[in-house]
Image (cartoon, rainbow, N blue to C red; front, top):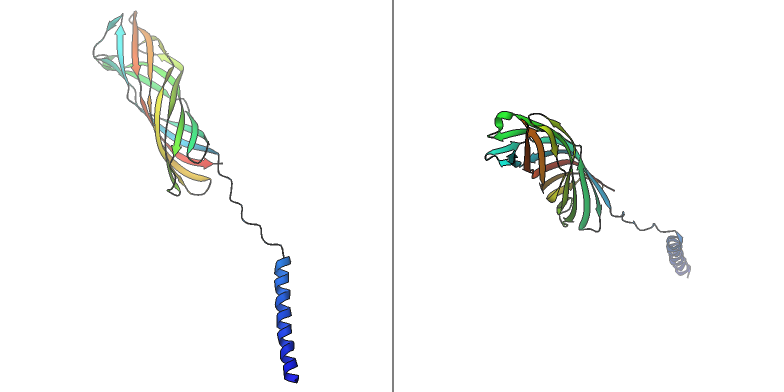
Length: 228
């Protein structure tokens, strides 16, 4: 009987201790489940941008077309920023602007001997709607399209006097990729092809000059991505 009582006491003690442990676990506040971070709605692209124009012009002097007369403009390097907003996981809208570059407009073809025709400072800007591809992890490609603008801030005379250039509105296509290092920070590479037409006027040797100008810049933009 003594051994039976001892055995029963040991079993009862073990059961009581186990019940106390489970009761303590039940009464202890549990950790809250992890709340996933809210998806970023805004993004910024900032960095250097190269502009390579596919320029040409149809030039009239004194109302007479000058066959073989055109223009050339050297590539430019500037700084650009793109600010965007995600409508949902796949669609966003963005606005891209840059520091206004100043370019020399040079004669080409039969008017190459005139050298520098004039100078212009202009501000390019693009508004695009974008589609973002998912399923590639931290590599996030996208495409876009939308209107593009060119605002001419200033012109300066050279071989042409009284040089003026109209502002322009056109269309742009876009493709790029974000490579995210963290949830918020990454790098990007972006290409935009814009289609722009403008009109330039001036005076050469007392004769009025008018040019129908094609610009069609290719914009190569790279730098830092920040999502917030």
